[in-house]
Image (cartoon, rainbow over all chains, first blue to last red; front, side, top):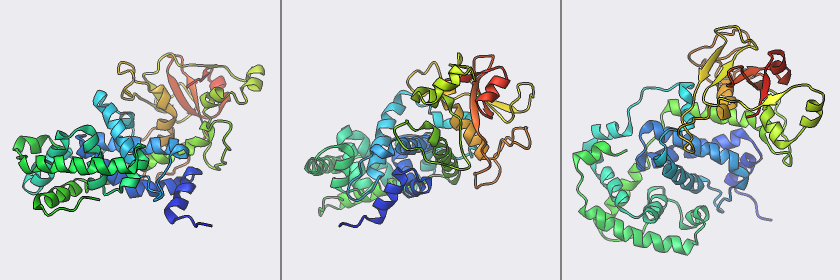
Length: 195
Length: 196
């Protein structure tokens, strides 16, 4: 008999409807999902709304989510975020604004924050420019495997592609990305508009 | 996971990318999200399809009659007995959360709209989200059964303030109003139960 990992047990509890168990996954991964949405160009308010929506979908579909052996839901969350971001470009308004029903603090957009810190974040912005220059599939595999440090197997499980395909694509994508990165200047305009 | 190389630009690229992943949600956003997730979990027992076991949740039971109608559970007998009438809202753009089962108190409710869900930008659907949104207001303590006045700001966290049974009715305007109560509350107000 193979014992279940603590993460697997926690996920099983979440699937059974335990909101505290699901809340654990939120606490673990909410920042990553938010960072992912921000890196894809969403301003802070939209990235926050999208993060909420990703976890809402995860809760509603939790019984159908197939996790990799590592019982890590992060790959699924990030892939779902990508799908939402595609939709988001068609309609930037999200239901999770809740029409101002819930408290919203006055916080600056990521773009403004980045502009303020441009001396420190030039390389970060340059990396985002590089990602934007890639083909969508290349960008996704680099985001998942390099930016978020996921294994090829975990990405394969979340995207439905064979792990070998993920590894091959990652190697090729990194070659392209590093070539672009080495040639990419970072302009002040780029810094100001990047989220 | 990255490919190891001897090119310093590669390390720079990887490090920069990992910095991108270090962005953090604000505390206020986290708190909003927790409330919304709690509302989702609280609302779920009535939303489950019939083949799945209903989990009993003691303090929270939301009367989402629309979900019951959709599932075809228990409607026959109630409808046959003439216990209530149900109808879809005719105006889904605006919905209302009520703190008491009264249509005459000017201070016992607030109105809301929602942004488009992307499927039809010209018609934001507040009605579909009325239960979730009103549930959030109760959990935050902005609505209370002891004081009908709606608070502008939430009470202090943790946001698990008392949540009564809620029922969605169709107001005379055709919009959805969510009241504390049950299906009989709609009937007593002369309203149809909302088919959300």
